[in-house]
Amino acid sequence: MQEPARYLMVIESSGSMVARLFDAQHRHLSDFDAGSEEVSVMTTGLQPTRGADPQLWGNTLTGHSAAERAAAQVYTLDV
Image (cartoon, rainbow, N blue to C red; front, side, top):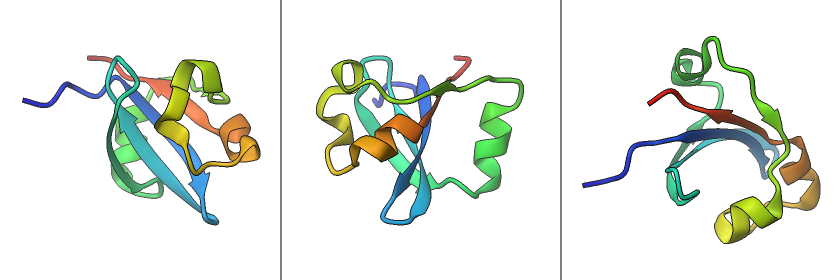
């Protein structure tokens, strides 16, 4: 059984915005289009943290530039 999503990260990837879901241990669960309605539903009433600290996120963001990581919006989801 898959762990529940704890974090939603909105980050640029190759010129488009992607929503990435992670569990409590920052393990990647799935990706989907950040423009989808699900993102607005999941983040209603939540304030994002700006930037994805490489020490905290480790290798889960391999392939994203330093600028993309710095501009990422990280939401802690209510579970």
